[in-house]
Amino acid sequence: GGGGGGGGGLRIPREPEWYLDDQYVVGKKYSLEPFDYGDVLKKELKDYRTYWTDSDFVPNRKGEALRPATMEKRVQRVLLYLGFLGNVIKAVDDPKSLTLCAVLNHHAVAAYIDWCQKARLMANSNIVENMSAFCSVVKFIHRNTPVAANNFSELEILSRYKSMRNRLSSKALNPHKTSTDLEAEGKWLPFELFIEAIESLQREFDDAVVHGGPNSARLLHDLCLLRLYQACPSRSGEV
View (cartoon, rainbow, N blue to C red):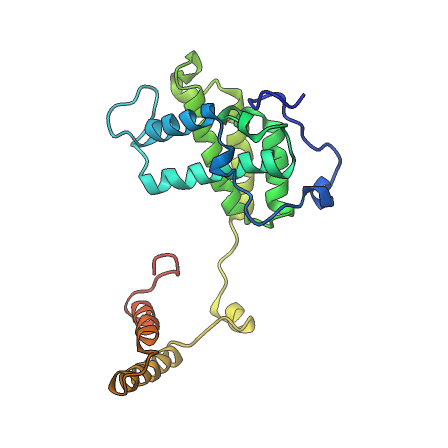
């Protein structure tokens, strides 16, 4: 049956390499859309956010409150999983019947990981973050039950997900590439050349300002970004 979008009652593809079948290919936006949130899910998401971000004492929550940005990423990962169930594999007849309890179905989660790895080619480190989000949902669902004692140590589903996460995590530890490796791939830029490029762009910008070129705003944008990289070593995310 397709009802009850909880832990049970989900239709999951059984055949190997199911993700190669055309019937499972959908558009670019996989996350569950707001118009497909059922009333139960809306309330759950609100309570889930509060449970992990409330700075006051929260019973059975171990550790500090999560920052809103971290929480938002976790919510987005859970919504991607629910979208996978509702829109990709059509695990339920009506996506509105899906609730956070769908995270408790480890067969569905295993199918989701399969899809992330093989159909979406998601990095293992990213899937590890998804598993962390699922663990936080499991704790939220069981927050008021006896298994919450001893930091949920008796909770079988949580142990199962942590084990899956650890296996993925060990695969995600790729050795760092050397400058020689990067040079061979055409991804290495000597610092001197980088500085030359910035100086050249600076001259181009100065010239555009003098002559009132329409492109000066874009040049300033690029120049600022490059100057940031010059001032402090950082990754693109921070910039």
